[in-house]
Length: 133
Image 1: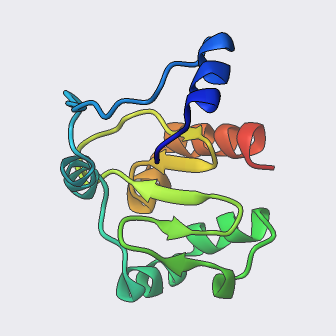
Image 2: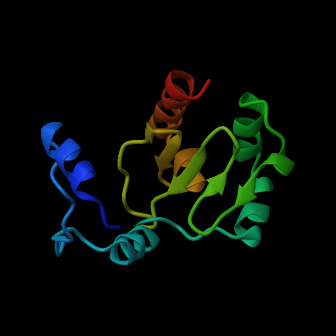
């Protein structure tokens, strides 16, 4: 875009310099690489996984607590979309990291691990009541 002399003078009087094309170099990890890391970090989700989860009473009890039906849950690539929030499960089944919720993104161990651990059940309930209900 070209400008005339009058426009140039007005811009410089306002302290606005002309735009110049600069080569921008990002030292940050590319988004494709970041997505690959996320794919590795979280369990893959699909309709079959969701069907298995719906057979577990513990999972359906969680949905009832959140006043959600199974029909409102959709399996995305790496998480379950529950409408209110997205639920991600750690891919490493041995990883018992703390359950956390940030920006409507619930991250936890698998439902099976939570079901077997009273401490994880308590932590899940606290995170849900504090952040999601």
